[in-house]
Image (cartoon, rainbow, N blue to C red; front, side, top):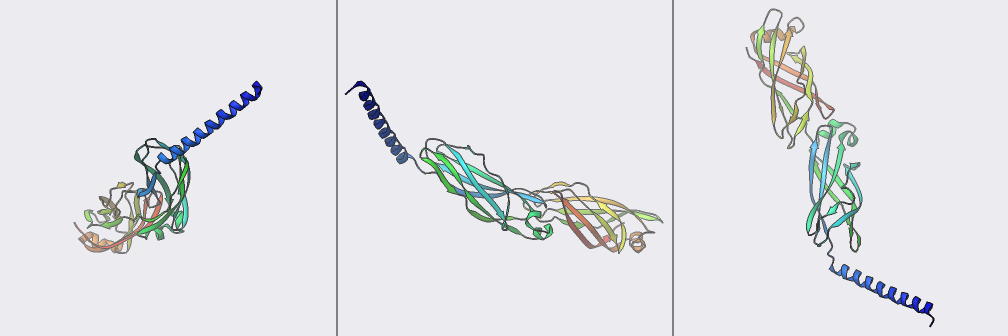
Length: 280
């Protein structure tokens, strides 16, 4: 056998042994590798207003192997009341810790105007249904493993705060009019914080339009919390004759506020009507 053929034969034999070794190593790796486990952990309302909400779906990936893994691919969609909304995903390449559990967070921002043509109608619901679908691919020593992300559930729809008057106090009365302090209580009916940009509207006393009330920005209302404030208003008797008697002597009168409550850029109609006792 000439030297050239001998060298080629040696190369082929070496390559064959190498391939056999690689196949053997692959079999060993496959037998030693334990398949990770993906489970749904929780759905949490991250933030909410009367305009939108962010819902995080959290999955937990358990990696029982002594080496870290990487997130290779993501295919994910999120639906609310049957309508697809914008959804975020964990970053590709995310490291999955060895011998541990890692959370995969999928945030979705839900704009209520995209779900219902009238936002107020949607806000009257107690809960809304959601559905997640898709899959994630995990890079492992034996290739990319895919795990489904199917899950259905509900989340709490933000409720409009309760607005209520307390007994007004007449602080000053003249022949021309009176100054009245209107105590107002705003209660957050939700189990999560809610931003309130303000309450404003036209006020009627005993059927007469006596002026406008405005709270200004109330900031963030704590979960199930209340905010109490007092709104002074100067009332002219000439333009509010039917309210003059109640304001001059005190007593009961019907009070009605027709306006709006602002939250997250969304104005929601507000109609508050109460029979109140005016105190001197």
